[in-house]
Amino acid sequence: MTKSVIVCALLCGTVNLINAQGAKVLNAYNYMNDNELVKAKAEIEPATTNEKTMADAKTWYYRGLIYENIYKNSFAENEKTKTPLFPELKDHRKGAVMTSVESYEKAIDLDSKKINMTEVKQHHAEMSKWCYQEGVNFYNEKDYPEAAKYFGKCYDIKLNYGQTDTLAAYNAGLSYKLAGDAPNAELFLRKAIDMNYRAEQGYLDLLHMYSENGNKEKYKATLTEAREKMPNNKDIIQEEINVYLESKEYDKALINLDQAIGIDPKNKALLYARGIILDNQQATLREEGKTDAAKLVEADKAYARAESDYKMVIEIAPDDFDGNYSLGALYYNKGAEMLNDANNILDDAKYKAAKAKAEKQLTDALPYLEKAHRLKETDIQTMQSLKVIYARTNQMDKFNEIKEKLEN
Image (tube, rainbow, N blue to C red; front, side, top):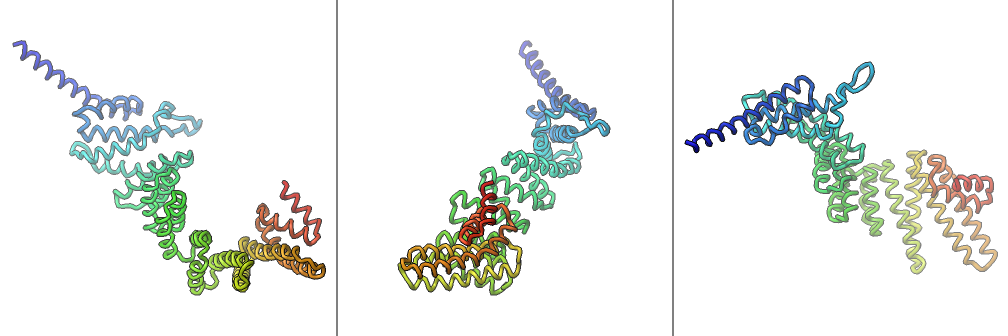
């Protein structure tokens, strides 16, 4: 008799507990409708861990609604005074978007005829825009792991409803890159590239990431792929140039560029890229020519081709800083080398002749370096070169002017 009473008491206690948790779900819903969202939050949370109510899609749907409203209402203001309508929600805003999204997803997974699943999905889909906004907020705060998480979730939600958000995919990839998460950065940047959204920048982001991580194999494979798909992109070409310059594989770079320029002979970016490689090649050959005279002949040929390419760049775009500076620097460097050679001449007459020739070479650089300086007045290298030329050509007014700029 006593045993039966005990069992009955236990069963009654269990029923009361279930009813209590069910009541909390209802209370949470009612508090939400009355805009008492902090109370609604306090009521709904215990129901998410109770064995009975946590298996009910309604619990998660209501939870999603509560957190969605917490986020949105935390920004609500009085139209006249611009003061918050619900100041108490500010401390509950953080994480509300993701909690809401995850709650809707749980409700969708559980499925139920007790609630309108179409409405659940509509709310879930709408949360994508708030995920994107939170991604922007975290990105601006330089919290890149959180930014990546929200941009990625925005992309995933939209994809779930047949939409592809290319901007969210790219931003997720960039944020993961900045967060140091290479696998996810690669995943999302590849999505953006495959959808042809900011593909050039996506490739550059991948290349820089592989370079920073020392992943030479992926770097080279991605660079080859990027060059094939975007043969005229200046920045990607520059990446390839850097690789060949580092390894001094000038001929390989020139083969690709000659082919591309043959197709597009007025392409400024390609001409400039080839000029840079020829410029570096002639400098290397000239250094080697100190012990091998045949190299000097090759150096002069490379020099003439670099000069021609730089001039073509300026002809196409007279106000191009890179073209003007590079041609000026080509003349300047040769003039400086000629001065060094002149200083080694013992015969006074021959020395003076060589010195005059070198200074003429430096003077040839002036109009291009001066144009480059006008185009980019803060460039230090340009000003330093001008300072030397003005001193060598006894243009002291200009020398003092450029000297003052450098000092300030």
